[in-house]
Length: 247
Ligand code: ADP
Image 1 (tube, protein in one colour):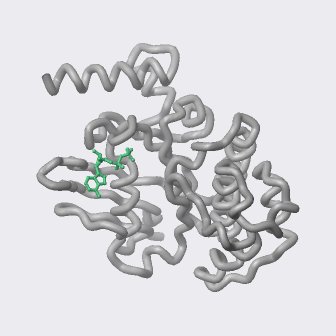
Image 2: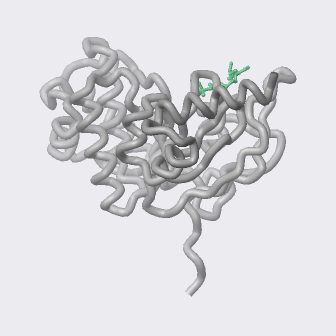
């Protein structure tokens, strides 16, 4: 039997915007069925990396494979569910219409009962699915995006700052949903700067600072290596060390 193909393989990725190095020599592999969290301050390069993974932008060097297929190949995106940062669906669509559209991209038909159930699981009142998105709050729009992302039922989920805009109860429910997806064998990659959320649910984390991957491993080992109790403290120490090295 051959070795299992990694859901994500990133090799030697470099990206520059207007001579400004945004990503430098990024490389790592995801294991099948793990929850991986990418941590970094605003502007660290998280979204840029995600956009390269989805071939929304290109990189100068290196490459990315999704389940053994080059990220440049449209086939690589067939089994990915992606939620962008600060997601807001079109305000003119009703919730159900948005979900119908999202599933149609994957050749799937919307099961309205399943959508109502998923909405409840993500702390979104299912009755609002018949209302226009224009009447939703920011958090409700984010939750609708998450409902769609999970209903697609892809084997690899890429979520850019999925916790942003969610209140504590919705964050707890999202974490349960992520754990349930992991138990179902899905691989999850998400970015966040809410460190406590990552600590709880991630098998491994990657710390990105100034476009460089400063750490990759378990949250437990990260805290241990940094001799700190909390992930927050360990993270700050890495950032401070990075600043000293750059000075
Ligand atoms: P993060 O997601 O970690 O907040 P980003 O990947 O969005 O960070 O941004 C990383 C850096 O790249 C920032 O300095 C940002 O200003 C810059 N950047 C992002 N997109 C562009 C762009 N289209 N043109 C020029 N610079 C950009």
